[in-house]
Image 1 (tube, rainbow, N blue to C red):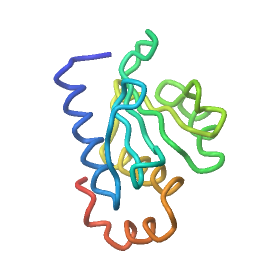
Image 2: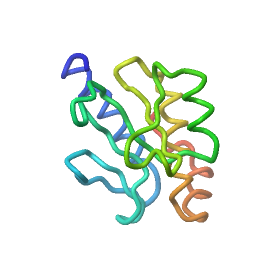
Image 3: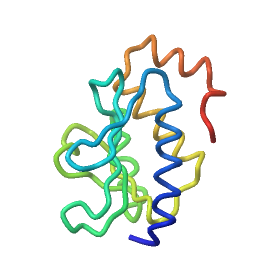
Image 4: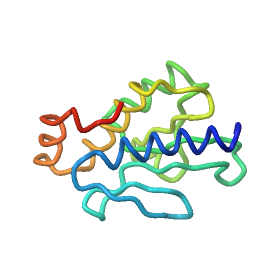
Length: 132
């Protein structure tokens, strides 16, 4: 699972990306930092060693077909998360190295799957709001 200081750095990057999007918030859900649109619908969770799986990862909403495509392409980093995988959510290991641009794209896609169309459009119009 890596160095705790490195995990905190990556969590801070995830937090910054998620909270830069319109009308997002963070709270613990099932013991994990979880990001919501309008405090109602979750779009991304950050989990560390969930039930002893040894992963530092995100679970997030994903566009149709994205989970299957990414898991088949790179099963070392992408996985089908328990509980939410059947809904098409994607797991991404953060302890295997992740580029900030790749992470930003995954966060944006997750947000777009959950947020109302007007908020998604506002986020796309103001891409400068993203810190990475």
